[in-house]
Amino acid sequence: MIRRLLIANRGEIAVRIVRACRELGIESVATFSEADARAPHVVAADRAVLLGPAPAAESYLAVPKILAAAGAVGADAIHPGYGFLSENAAFAAACEESGVVFVGPPSRVIAEMGSKINARRLMERAGVSVVPGETPEDQSSDGVRKALERVGLPALIKASAGGGGKGMRRIHEAGDIDLEIDAARRESQAAFGDGTLYVERLLENPHHIEVQVCADAGGRTVHLFERECSVQRRHQKVIEESPSPNVTPELRRRMTDAAVGAAKASSYRNAGTLEFLVDLAGGRTDDAAFYFLEMNARLQVEHPVTELVAGVDLVRAQLLLASGEPLPWNQDDLAQRGHAIEARVYAEDPTNSFLPQAGRLLLYREPNMPGVRVDSGVAEGTDVGVHYDPLLAKVIAHGESRGQALARLTNALRAFPVLGIRTNIPFLLAILAHPTFVAGRAHTGFLDAEMPTLVGGLSHEPPRFVREAVAAAGTRARETRSTPDTSVATGLDPWERLRGWRL
Amino acid sequence: MSGASVVTQVGDGVYRVEQDGRAEVVYVAGQPDDPWAFWNGQVFRGSFGETPPAAPRPRAHRAVVQSLTAPMPATVVKVLVEPGDVVKKGDTIVILEAMKMELPLRASGDGTVKAVHCREGDLVRPDSVLVELA
Image 1 (cartoon, each protein chain N blue to C red):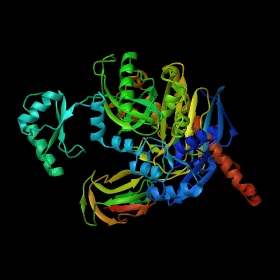
Image 2: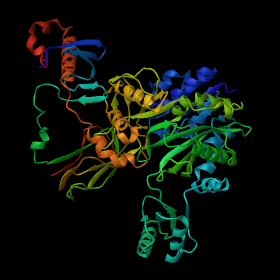
Image 3: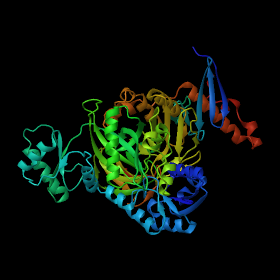
Image 4: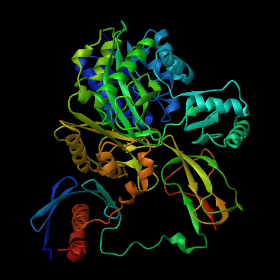
């Protein structure tokens, strides 16, 4: 069993890992940058090691410093959390070479999944659908046209050499497409010096649904059902839930079978997630098509919704599996119970282009109510800086039904005051109240399409009772400030002190 | 139509406002001249009194029609203009980076670049003037 674990991360996930360590009797060692010296993850851990200056490249991404810290404290394992070095195959390999357990899959698997082409090949071999697409051997207009027929319309023609929309054309009808092919080829040539084209089936407004898997050292592999994460802004997930309101029992069986098969085919170990795009244009059906998007060889931000619905502790399982223990559950023991929804609270201003916000949390009070869990990496007084991800906290609600989970999450966010910097809490509440989300029909194009409606209603004039509370607070602050100075009290006009009161 | 309100402080920064028998809980923080308030998932900031909206910022009265300021602590990634350049509304003037995200600062009107007060690589503070347009 692991005895002393170094956590190569910060914020809420580092705090989350410390808690799992404490339950298992593992000593936890936090790492931190100069900007995080008093951060909650440092306070929570048994020990803490300073890595370096605030920029991540000099601290949380500095592989030699992290390995040196592990050596100095005698850590026998490293948990990378998510982000930072969690999917860095070279880091995992360096841990393996220095005899420190990396809590995650072997470096070889991370490398394989990190390459889109390799991962795609592996999925095809395992019989998992990938978004139909090919680089036609015959690159003439005729050859590209035939490839389009093979992948099916609507489709995308894009540069084989790169991304970013350059050279990308949407083809909806098979009619006059020679001009489009020529234009795509010219743009690809100009942008990447390579006019080779790739054609791919265009999925219109797919749903993002992923499957959690876990495997032990012996290769025994289970799934922990699905999470739907279609509410995304610029590919950043905002709200996640489990079960998906769009997955029938038969579709769930097909998707989880595919996920377990793919994990076994890649000799996957520890916890991981297979992300799929699901085409629900034909409705919530048993035979809906789903396509492999990517595999995340790590713990996901949204793992708590699975924990609440399946009644498991994924971080604890990760630490047991990394210690060589067998899986703590059989597939038949696992079931989905009730419904869980997570909302990510970001330091960003939804009324101003979602600009990231920095500053001190003047007031920060997490909600505490039935069925609500808050995973956070900040506290009242924390200075939120500009160096790291703007995620402040995750609020996860669990209920007997989706409706109850939604009501609990809404109540929790309404009772989560964060003052001093702007957050997306008002925006999250607008999403939770939107009829499309309430109906469980939000697809990956939902936020973009509804953005004007969602942010349009966020600016309000303060109600009278808010102004009265602020006035009372202002009066108190002035009185408190003047109390130690006795000379001021006599000179203060009481009407001046009462300014702002409206009785 | 409405009676008197009773405001009671019930905790650090927590106020209960009762009016006509109904109570609301409001959270307040910040300096008296720059208060923040939270109620029921909504955040309010700025002027709460009976005074009319704050007077326009002094710099609006000067010949300088626009100052592009940093909205938050950030690193200057790219400065796309030089003094004398003519810019149009919507043109990207400076690209900042904060929290791993790039933030383009755009001209809010047509004009000529009068002065550039930042260089690539600079760490800039909130509200510091980066570029002046006339």
